[in-house]
Image (cartoon, rainbow, N blue to C red; front, side, top):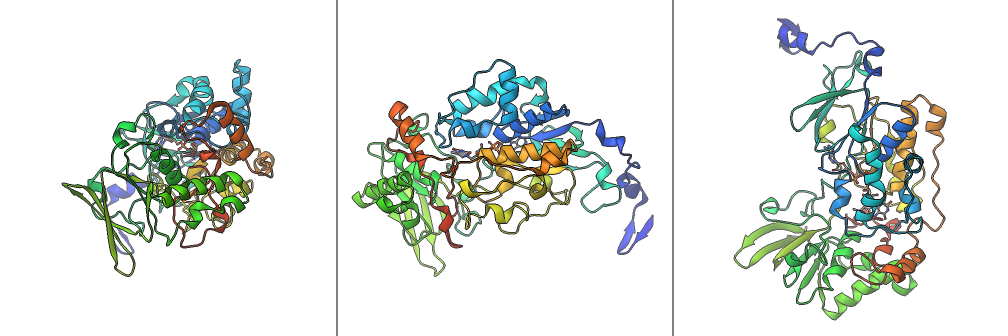
Length: 471
Ligand SMILES: Cc1cc2nc3c(=O)[nH]c(=O)nc-3n(C[C@H](O)[C@H](O)[C@H](O)COP(=O)(O)OP(=O)(O)OC[C@H]3O[C@@H](n4cnc5c(N)ncnc54)[C@H](O)[C@@H]3O)c2cc1C
């Protein structure tokens, strides 16, 4: 036994926690581990492959891009030219792949079939499916222990209990699997976990139609996902729709109508407003979800506002479209420096703040903005943005190009961050309108629904969460 400041420590435990003296060669022969096989994780793999750095990609799903697959029926509104990573393109083309039309706006399913799945195939067994990461640490080091820390490998534990080691970690595990709660204060509403609530973007005109048609449906949230779902639901006959928002009115979601700087955005809001004003959609404002009860009549959702006033609605289905948040719990034994508001790194937060930026105005950034006090761990992709809904694949691709360059020791390339987005933004309404004339929208809704990012630049501190450029 030996004494510490505040108690006696068992020698056995101390011996167990003391790592072997690290040498610089201890990690260099280990792979970089990429967590998540979505668009950004696979782009990281492409950059690692190009630079000849050994890697393993761990994907929780039974297929790559498992999260994209969950919104596979939704057509994105940035064209292919911004959705394909440069290194991935080079590798694929060298393999005989023909790039899709650069102006095409793919559905999530098309993005997987025509780009992400062929890309993953190039990496064969370096991509491990069904490999869910549950925890990351440093071999022999908890979060507190410092001396020699950066020389020891990362330790990655999977859901099946197996462990592997890595020289660095690129965490591209996204946020889609950690949606925001329904409760208005950021805490789950009472009873929220006891009833079925749809947190994804349901395919109400496709595979999920039976679950929604003819049912009373409540959609909670004021962002793009809510608007997408509401306009799709409005296509279903005999389906009463209620839309609940925290704000006192839906001005922000409606946008500026004919006077809106973005015509397609105005059109989205106008269409939603028409449905509300005609009574097709019942709008409940000042709705602060407090409790959810399963009753004989259906799911009762009760709002209690800060003054204590209550209102309630009873429905058959609830769609929670309140946005997403990052789950940093797998990295809780690492030293992270997180922005207290967004949950991104502190350096990144001002560059992506939805109070200041829309997705098209986020400046290029890379390894310096993504670095944590834990050397060698980088959260990238939509996870790196925390709760900011301003993420675009194109910015994620530049992130991983920079991070991988840094891991290769090429600091000049790592710091030469660039983002080639047109002044009009990546979400060009002209392109969407042109495509609609060709194929219509995957959602079956005509008129540019997905071309209409919501007005994030004017969002105030009390604005609804869940508004986003692209989701
Ligand atoms: C409906 C919708 C439309 C969008 N439209 C656009 C658009 O038009 N343009 C644009 O640029 N962006 C768009 N986005 C935003 C963004 O580009 C996408 O969300 C994109 O998929 C983010 O890529 P990612 O690789 O960071 O994360 P994800 O695609 O979420 O991938 C994360 C992967 O990690 C896996 N994973 C999660 N946890 C673990 C774990 N513990 N261990 C192992 N694997 C794990 C998941 O299964 C998933 O495959 C849209 C988003 C949504 C939701």
